[in-house]
Picture 1 (cartoon, rainbow, N blue to C red):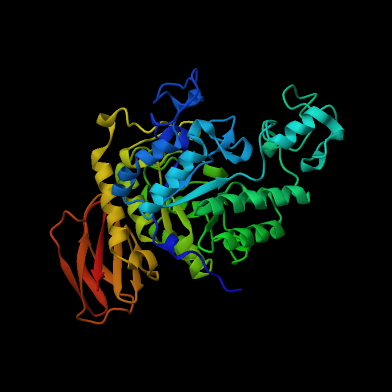
Picture 2 (picture 1 turned 180 degrees about the horizontal axis):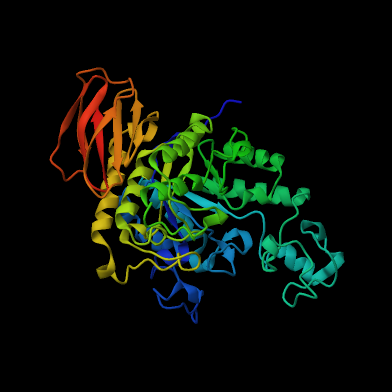
Length: 490
């Protein structure tokens, strides 16, 4: 099967936003008597802090300056939870977020800046307030929607239950608040195909699918792809799958998955001495790894799928489902910076989790879901923010970092280097994880002829240097402690 993924994704830098905690706008009109928690309240207190879609619109200039070209939003449909994974109406944008008018303005303003917007689709389960489930609660066995869910007895116990009288319907991870849909029912399938088509036609640029493996139905996802791509052939479809996903990435379902395997490798190599090895994101182990093992891991990931898929993978370091990067590396900022530079220079679409760029940190959910500190700009890590802006600019400036091929050049001791090459440009990226500067000899990989000169473009604040290939190698390449160099040949 011929595989094709959206070209815009290969050039994109994503920014993930948890809407309730990103930005609150005074333009959002709420009924009188609405009360939110104070902005910046501890996230473990739960509740709503009032972030909304107009707030995102108001910060688009900031995001553009950061180098962002695509937004991935956590769920925005009507829900009775601040994270909105408890959906009760898939055809309504939550009024607390500003409703449909706010989404319309966000899409129009983002598209005017050549920025894309991808929404979170939570199709496996809904909330107890979802209209079909509520219909069953009110009507029991006489409800026409009885087969939209898997019911195991009467009366239903959605709110009052205990170990002796548990809830008696299928629910995601056994959580009564999240009744699980029965995708063997054609009405359920038709409903979500209409949902997916409706919002693509409204103007969104793609879907991120929540726990798609829970809907273990290849035919449904093939229909989903057909419907979405018919409505917009350039739409992006990315699934939340935490492991290798061969069957999902053959060109008939998803364009990509969230590449959690990449970030586990990056943390293991760039934060060998500070990594929190007792933390298990998604149940997977974090462990220090050396340069050869890291190289083998990355080579495996780069060769795992069709090249079209590899270029579209959503490469993330953290998300709403994990601890934040700075927490994972135990506040080792040099490790966080190396991870980011690696993320921005390898194949795939990098995704920044909101607030990482100003130094937000926190353990796993709910601590990773704090409010963006617009109210406390003095607490921003300005040096880190400047670094983020520099590294996104680097990726945007050099096409080889976005669409070039990938070849490992060196992986030994503390040095790891690779080459990205496109038709008119070639880039070498070399990392040094040691606490001392090194002068490395880097093989050219048989691509550069002797006498070819490459110039340094990173670090940007350093005095530019150039290196000439001799005997198939670049010799005495200076790499600072806990740093990297990027060399370019046009």
